Image (cartoon, rainbow, N blue to C red):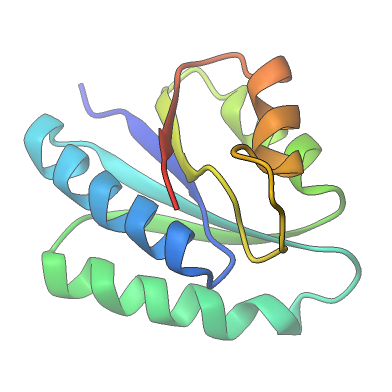
Length: 123
């Protein structure tokens, strides 16, 4: 039975690398990808990020769904991950924000609350 791989995408190079890894994983397992983009207060800002990722998934012939959520990124990722059909979350260690830490704040918060495995892709 096919499962879903959540890929939070924010347009950063690290999230693009995470998407590439997730595409390989989805092909190997026959899974689907669930793209999510989280915005603080306006969905339109995430549309171009989702559109670019969707183009890559279509080229790779990987089934996917996409969603733009409003709210706090780690909380919204965890909410998506509570679905019983989720295999894992694949995300970058850091997103679009500038951080000197090895694990960004969203990645750290997601790690502490995740109900499923997480694969972190280094920046």
